[in-house]
Image (cartoon, rainbow, N blue to C red; front, side, top):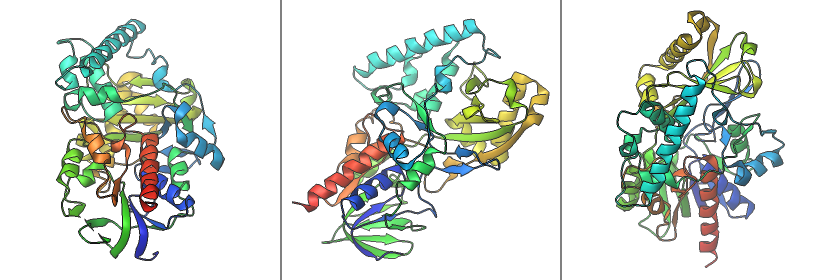
Amino acid sequence: MPGNDVEVIVIGGGAAGIAAAHRLWTAQVPCLLVEARPRLGGRALTVTDKLGFALDLGCGWLHSADRNAWVGIAEKQGATIDKSVPPWQRRPLTIGFSRAEQDAFDKARESFFARVSKAAEEAPDVAASSLLKPGDRWNGLISALATYISGGELECLSVKDFDAYEDTGVNWRVVTGLGSVIRQHAAGVPAALECPVHRIDHSGKRLRIETAKGVMTADRAIVAVPTTILSGEHLVFTPALPRKTQAAAGLPLGLNDKLFLALDHAEEFDPDTRVFGHTDRTATAAYHLRPFGRPHIEVYFGGRLPRELESQGDDALFHFAASELAQLFGNDFARRLKPIGLHRWGVDPYARGAYSFALPGCADGRAVLAEPVDNRLFFAGEACSPHDFSTAHGALQTGVAAANSVIAARNT
């Protein structure tokens, strides 16, 4: 492991931490990237199936791709960018969802989001669920959509924060996996793996950072860990930073899990199409058929549903998906499916969820979370982004911003 005394320590080897460490390293600022896992990437994780296809078990889309810095980084690495239309911008298959129903849902969804935008301009902040029309046929599917977007149900979501997210509508993918691009961005940066940080003592002249591999000292640190780590007792600050921990508690991580299935005789479906398991409930999955034209189904779970299924083990997510697909395509369809990729983010001890949302009344917490402390402790991560939260490019932006603040501080 690199030396235990360094000028800047970056805590957390996800997209934000990697971006921060890369910026410092290229600026020739001595730094060390410290990560609890035996790998870099954090909530970005690319694995390869038996056929050699890359599967993004964590973040996988280049959202707002026309202004997403990961696009240029991926291209510089030589990665291939797929710019085809994403499945949610195409019409879902009509199986289980007639064209007339699709039109009615589109109208209901657009009306709901218009109400959200209007309410976001008013006070006080409210839960997004309060803007559903009582008894509307589409409330369940609108709430399901919210779990795909935010990882939480509408009753948990701040209207002001939900509306603050900005998206250009341009969404691309990396053929070899976004997780691979993010991990490769750390190439050459000194890193300590399998090194969880337990305490940051900032009471003295230098920072004293207690890790599973001993004590490290530094002039400054960038903390780029999920809010679930900041809000609990997993990472302790001495003296305590109650404003930080309270802000993190108001920005919990929702949960989204991806399950990849191999599909026999997949050619009967058009590439990159999508179906919903059910259209009348929140606890349902979305199914991306033949992503990249491959013989796969990417199953997407959001909110309380994957938490409940995770507690039952890996097989529970597969059995749920197989059951919903069998209801859509017939009982024999389940025999054509085989699970090939899954990571349970809710029980991952260094994530405990997927990405952040703000509880009602807590939208201002993102700015509080991003504030530096004594010009020595700096903070980064998707939860610190005011408008690009829940994304890898939002994480990158905050990581670079934190690194730039460190560079400015050391030059004063």
